[in-house]
Length: 461
Image (cartoon, rainbow, N blue to C red):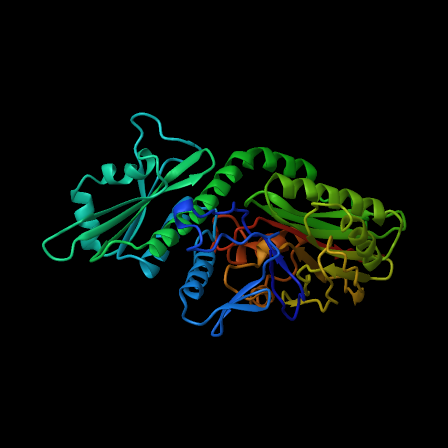
């Protein structure tokens, strides 16, 4: 979970891929830090002062321990930013070359194969570093070097080949997670063999990459089932009031917990909902259904949007293991031409005016649902008959490495053709947003799917 503070959303949750712990082999235990665990309870920091654990200085600046922690932090930031196997392999190779060796190659088996069958061969996935060392490896028995790590019965296989000048050190480490072999990484360096600390660092990076590869495999295996479940749970926007024009759009991505809908209330008003559960996969889809079902029940009591969020947060925060979720509620009142809004860590909606310009709605910020914060407030908004209110999940605007305010500003800077219906306006808006339409410009810059809902009040006679 990553929390980002900004002007328009005080608290935001972005999905992070789940990955297993990357244990250190017994031969190198104590030389390299274990992969941090969410429940470990140890707060570690490394600054110019050295390594600090729970407020106590345990090693000075520039010490071997401090360097190991710094390297571990770099590995966590550099490896596994997406669910793409080749991207993960390239990130692993680049990290090793930057930190430890002259050249690195990563060979992978096909996804979901799980183990090596007779006659099956590794497939080159990524390479980085000096081309001359890689070339010498290609001229040699590369397959033999690669499979040593898989066949020798040891987690790490090292060799040093003396040469006429400096010699070549080779380190092969399998990419292993439980009962699954994903491939092998080779680290090459001219000059001297890898010492114990460097060997442990390569092993740590390999296990970290393997955990991300395993997570990507799990997502691919569960994907079709979860996508079917999500389509069933989120099919259609629901029934809106006759005086409200409504349109919804979805774009595929890693399946998970994003949804939008309209709840028609007996008071003659319509509640619009956009929400996003943290993470991807079956668990996120199941939690999304729990949030959605309870929200509809609470909404039937005719509470204001911020009251609904308070009740929903109080209920969900008591359930063990329930994932946090962001949510935006807009209560439309066609009789008075107004909207009442409240948000829980969700991006604010955008109003597209009659001239085709767009502007974000100023919205009081609140914590995500399921955190027990319950500090939610509402804001009123007058809506002209030609105004179109657009609500969306993070997948529409989120871009890796970009501040959320910058992403929102890009959306509000767009201009659409005036005079369109709600559905046509929404289609044009999605076509203009980079990555908003599958296969369109900027697609792939985010790891999330998108749910969008647009509403416009019909003029009353």
